[in-house]
Length: 278
Image (cartoon, rainbow, N blue to C red; front, side):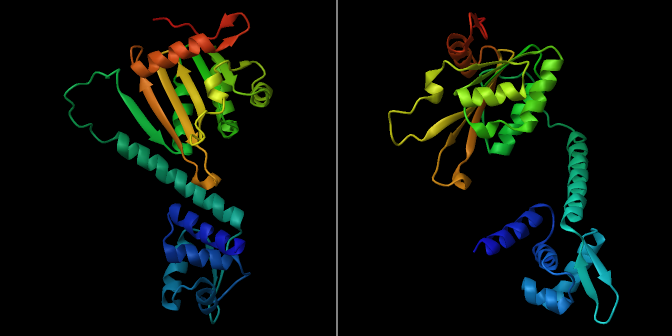
């Protein structure tokens, strides 16, 4: 069952990286054998034999398959590490081209170019929220206050961005909802101002037993930009989805509420981490 699951997952991931279904199935099949003919690939991959040749030719042009011109022809997949690196480079190249293309498109005319400070936007998905978090950290000018509610938030990429902000002179304050998370952050960022959060509602068990939602991250940038995310804990980790709300503007209601809560609840020693500033 586990082998079948891994096989299906590999095919799906290859498709997400740009391969078509038959191409992905043929590559996975070849990865399971030293070499194979079109007939053997078809039997292992369940791809029609007449379609194997087309799929393998595409894989060859992508640098994922080698061909031996014997009779019958023999095919073999490149080592998986080499294949993964080839796909990574192609993926990154496509992303760079995409960014250039989108940036080169003339913007549509807008009625009002001014930013609306009362708007709140929603964002879904751990990767998307992590990327937005890193972008906001990189754009900070004076101060970053970041509260960690779940261990999954603590990634090497996050620490790299926080460390880079520190090195530019930006004040970085990191709160954690437990001593364990505090120690993990302090070890990764020894020069940061790290503390255990006094916001009890971040870590306390909800009185409503049906509420399995926990705060994942709370980020306040320069006291005028806020991102708050939460995760509804499910029986399976695969079923858990991180969701966030994001607001910008010093008078934005979401930002004001978060700023006031953090000003009264996030303290390190005798000095508050932030002030209301309203």
